[in-house]
Image (cartoon, rainbow, N blue to C red; front, side):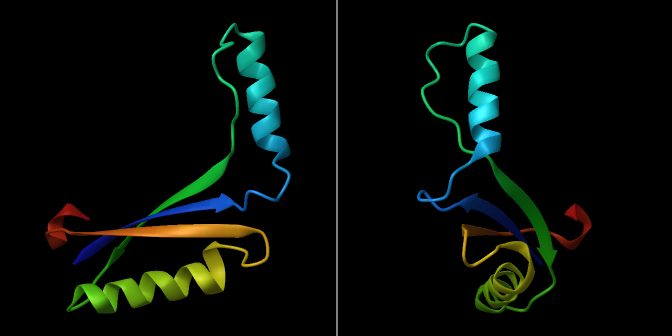
Length: 87
């Protein structure tokens, strides 16, 4: 069993209005040291696969077909082997 930790983020060239709103709110709260905010998505997925390569293939396909918009978003996957009862 593998746990995939997936980060989906907007590509740097894409305007991030949610990140801008968060940045503005942080400034309003006095967090002047924050210079830039980008918002994204974090997904944890438990995958029952025999090998790490098979789990990577499942996570990759899920990102490409559902979790990330290939025009606007990038994604990264980190796999961790876990015990089945940890899910």
